[in-house]
Amino acid sequence: MKLALLSDIHANLQAFDACLADARARGATQIALLGDLVGYGADPVAVMQRVMTLAAGGAWVLKGNHDELACHPPEHLASHALGEITAGWTHAQLGNEQREFLDALPLTHQDGSTLLVHASVDSPARWHYVKDERSAAESLGAAAQTDASVRYVFGGHVHRQTLYFQGSGRGLMQFLPTPGTAIPVPSHRSWLATIGSVGQPRDGRTEAGYALFDRHAERLTFVRVPYDFHAAAAAIRAAGLPDFFADRLSKGE
Image 1: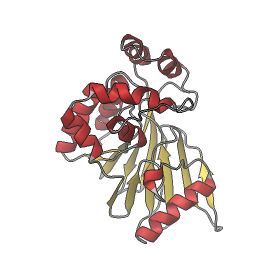
Image 2 (image 1 turned 120 degrees about the horizontal axis):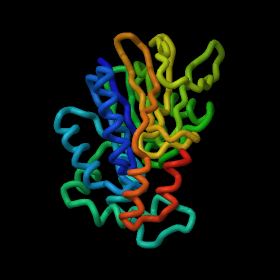
Image 3 (image 1 turned 90 degrees about the vertical axis):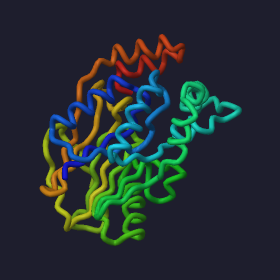
Image 4 (image 1 turned 90 degrees about the horizontal axis):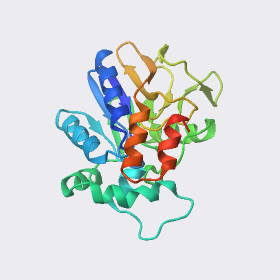
């Protein structure tokens, strides 16, 4: 099985379509969407139409924190919470069926030795960021407590592509991958990857990001896909959303 792992789409239709096309061209046989399907971007309805079609065809779909906000937008905005700014707008754009679909999504999905989550396996509804070896160890440890057979944990949320693995010592080691290079991930070790963001990468690059896991070959490839981020930014401005959400697409931040 070749598992395409896409996360943090953020209603960026151009990036989503580009990553789906790339994954299919690379022979993906299973699609997994790890949450934050909406929020920030201008096309929540079109993105959700694609997501629901994929789910009907067998794709695995998880809920992210922005999906939760879109279903239950806050009455009062926190000045520092950027995600809350678009939550009410997204809620109004979506139809009842789409909101109900989002609200019913699970927080995790396990398939054999692979566990999927949007944020961290320890208290997934609290949306902890897996941003270093310590937080990766907490997530991987929680996965092992859930099921000792879990060897692979894949998540999003941090909008960066990073791989953590159990080294020869007790602690986890961090590895920054080269996009397009297949990495051996043998199952005698435990692995955790943050797969990056389709719709809003934050590593200084404009290309959309996702990952492809070849379970039979035990290889993981982090992928970057060029897309028309100018069109995605123009759609944000045309929708009347803050320019900030458009500007950051051209900076990868």
